[in-house]
Image (tube, rainbow, N blue to C red):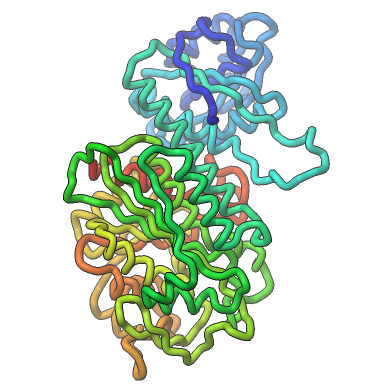
Length: 501
């Protein structure tokens, strides 16, 4: 399973296409590999640069046939943009557009690294591998017509350079994380008639069966009632597909720090109609993606196990369908959460924080010392940060900084927001310990975070509101080239776990 990775000098391994990432200005072709390719092609690269047919803009790609002048039958030129502005996402985007340019032929692609570019060779290798695999993803697995027009997959990636262990480790880790990211995308893109709380639990059990030291447990309605999980249970009451609490435990044989256990909590509302507070019909079909945080959580701990990281971890995924029905919870209801606190319901469409509330309590009860929750929670966060960054709130400065650094390194970008105690007044209730929403059109991401903090327990905790980058309506213009689930959180979780190991 997965895309094979090889590392070999150019000419040592045959590839179907050789790919060159190029930065502006193009005139000097500063990389040695690019100069050699240009010489073998009779100066065609310089001619294309001089004519403006290839400018090297970020996200630009040009496919050339080599006509026997190179061992590879094709060369793909990919742009990184201005040299001074090249970052790791420029490499990911270059790889994605190359994968798309090769969509009609597929096969193997060899990436020519360039020591003159402003990124280390291991960073170039890992981001080019990530971009190739993530950028080559297609969500159309349910198409039955015109299958011959579907993009052909990249079947292998070669890093065209002298092999070092550091380079191999970076490339293979990137391939594993990108593939886990795409598996999380598959879950987010599944139609709700195929993916519900029960079938999501089956996916978790199958995942645990693939990996060493990973075990799955599924709690159904009876177990939820015994634990007093009145918040999660209420959200799923209106659907015939009953809620589940999905628990995955990773216990490596020799953890580096026995006193640390990472807890990852994911919102998995497999379809969110809003309940009695019904959503508008327009774009409701995208509410199958309201479990994207749960998908990222599930495959995030899967990535930890696949990488065999020496850190203990527990993933708790709260799965429910939020539908109107004869037994659906109502505005005005008062729910009893597992930690004993009561919640007045003022909006049944503010359900994500309810399922997370009981899941957060459970993660702490099971020994999580450092907790992160991921959820497609508020539309206001998407309005604030768009589809690139997730906003997050943390109760601990050191934990906040670790998460920010993990986001920058992984590509799952996060931006910190203030968690100020005076935001708590937004969820004050005259009837219960708190209410689940506010009638004021103010600070909805912050009030949701203040609500969740009531259930986060003692110790470092952070809430990631990934409403924007978790599920896309259209291409993001970078290495996410198609709409739908992004697998957000998989790479972030793996990077964060590595920092705790």
